[in-house]
Image 1 (cartoon, rainbow, N blue to C red):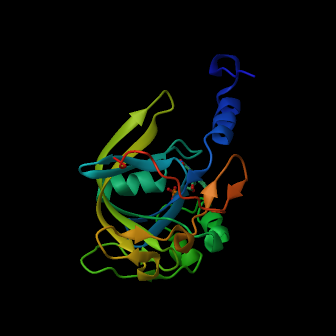
Image 2 (image 1 turned 90 degrees about the vertical axis):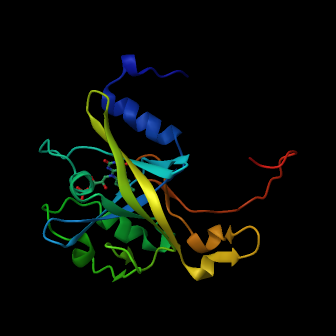
Length: 206
Ligand SMILES: Cc1cc2nc3c(=O)[nH]c(=O)nc-3n(C[C@H](O)[C@H](O)[C@H](O)COP(=O)(O)O)c2cc1C
């Protein structure tokens, strides 16, 4: 079957795409509100996009009242943000943090999620996730007719829970089972990590 955006409404095609591009990693993002509290929200339009310097992207939309989502405003104005990889056991909190609260009201306080200080960082990390990427705004590009905010952030520091770091030898190995990421499928469906397979390429990996 072939689906074309030309023959379907924007919403219908968006839902189809979200069911095709699966599983999607989730960025659980802390930013600072103007009143110094923390804003927290999940974004599944998220990935790494460049290595030198290391850059990730999240794609953030608009609120129903036609203002930019709080995460976008905060990154634009204060630049720092922290992306966590949410563990499956925090799924309910991830969903809870996607509720729109009035601008400046802290989701971390509202959901009673603890934070921890990371040395040298202005923003804290969440307690619970095993990986946190400390990022600084690189560039924000408005994409498409609905002007979705493609937020590019340079990763300045990667915090990993010691328990997830398996090998400190020549190659540092991270145990995906310890990170235990929650991923998004279409609609209300989510996926867990499941079986991990190790596949070898005939040539050394690039
Ligand atoms: C798992 C999950 C993934 C989401 N992914 C996105 C996304 O990629 N882009 C987006 O604009 N909103 C996404 N949302 C909705 C936002 O989390 C929601 O609009 C939130 O209230 C934004 O918060 P903020 O205004 O504090 O930034 C997602 C929600 C959930 C539950």
